[in-house]
Length: 112
Length: 229
Image (cartoon, rainbow over all chains, first blue to last red; front, side):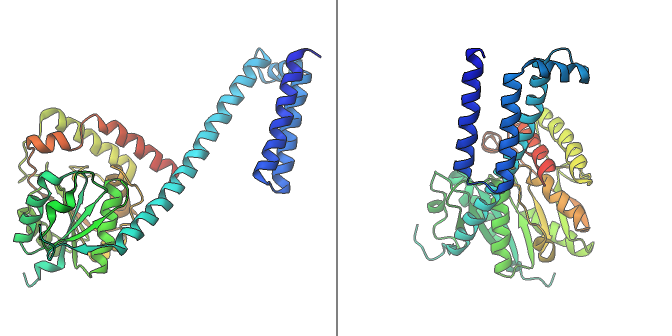
């Protein structure tokens, strides 16, 4: 085992624990995290397998395949985050609106 | 017309317009309309500029955007049982004389909503050439987004009946609300017409209003709106 593998594996394991504890996830989430991190550890231990998969898919190097999948994954992630952001913004808008409608006033009797 | 002008509620969204808001409101009050000023958390004390005028004043506790302000105004006007609702810019671009014409148009043609337009015969505008070009492009983009082709896509002057207003659930807080309004018209199969209006570009409104460059921002909001509806 080369040093980088130890660094990466400990990072992945730490992240898995952190995510699980922090998010108080459901069983399904726990399984997903386990599968995902398991795959990560596997590819760290046997990096050449990515090249095999890549070539089977018609990509030259394993690293390229990883790069492509990460790009797609992050794009998806950004969209999901935006969707959540918009939902939050809508809720926030509702709150501000409700509040302001309660405080509506007529200015005619107030002196300039 | 047999219609109380006070049942026409003019909604004026306002953000940092202290310099002109009083004049705009006074012109509308002269015509005996009910005026709703929605202060979108202005930092220039627009409220004190309005003191003493019989307007409904409502303030967002933080800045949300023009679309959000219009919806707040619509909800207030509906609460006050408005018969007709008009959206009107605070910066003095719009002409209070046009409102009567628009309401008449609304009633004669049995329409649900009337869009003001600078580009139908009978309208007068001194829009700069490049602005015209931007508006023409915006018109087609809004058409793609809403399936409704208006001659003047981003004109803030509109009049609608209270039944149409009930359906104007605007969720686009910023400038892309124009396209959303069109989209809602299409979704609810509302009958719409266009009416020529006068828009004057003063130095003030040119400085304060939507700049050409912000059309990029509007386009961006619009794309997000279409993705996440």
